[in-house]
Amino acid sequence: MAQLIKLQDYISRYETDIYHYPARFVRLKKQQWESMRQYWERNRLGEEPAVVSAEEPEEELDEPGVIKKLKLLFWKEKEEEAASVQEEEPSIFETIELNGVANLEELKHKFLDQLFTFQVKWASSTVREKSYIDAKYFHDERLKFFLQRLPDNYLVLYEPVLRLKKAPVELDVILLTPTEAWCLTFLEEEEQSVYIGSGERFWMKRSGEKEGRLLSPVLAVSRMEAVLKHLFQQQTLDYPIRKAIVSRNGFIDYPDAPFGLEVIDYRSFPTWFTRMRNLSSPLKTIQLKAAKSVLDFGQTTSVRRPEWDEDHDFLFISETEEQEH
Image (tube, rainbow, N blue to C red):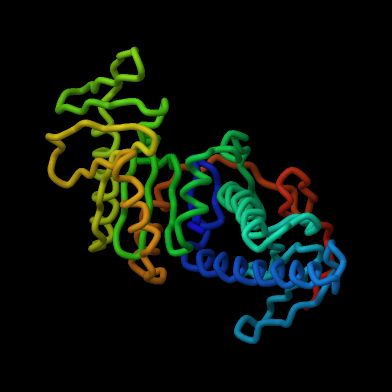
């Protein structure tokens, strides 16, 4: 599952430490999946009750100071910070009722749906601060599609707001892969629409019997490319940038597309997306540096949490437990 490192102008765990959280997410995801799968297998064979009881997982030897507990499928982690403040990590999952899950494929779907919610929360809060999320993002089909289908080694910035020259700039979608950055803008208003591209400021759109105009998507995707080039150059990063106009449900007629711009519509999207999904390279240092160079300019709107207060809306802080150090 791809990792959502920036959403709008919300505060993100990743912007606090981009070199730490990507690997942490992958580890938590693998641990949680194995726990869920094992419990489901036992329950299916009549060896365990449908709702999981608490277990004490083995403490990881390579991370002294980290204490992990599994309570009703809630993973919590605590780490000592520089200021000697104990941090409680969010659980990835709420309790999942395992009765009625017929097969492993159905279990995977439940797992991914919970994981999607977790990613949105991680991209909108830290232990000390939180942003007020527009509820639409929990139901955003495009966001969910890309996060659930792309692998862990992809870092996603979704409609990020950057602060450049003291002014906020909202971009579309940026994918940071181990080998390159993708700037994506989308044309997906109505099913089976036809978009007729040109070098002009406006494009034509045909949807059934209706015709209309829309602002050229080339402007948005070119702006994203220019922003990334500037930020990467500041850090002397040799990290390729690619750009594309995407329509998963329509057709784009743009035979004179400028060099370096990919046009991906209903006909070509499956092939392109399969190629993206099959990138097996692990997370790269240059990829994380590229992410940091963008996140450093991210605009953040958030409020401070009352320390150790319980937050039922976000499910990030549980009842205060005694420190175990």
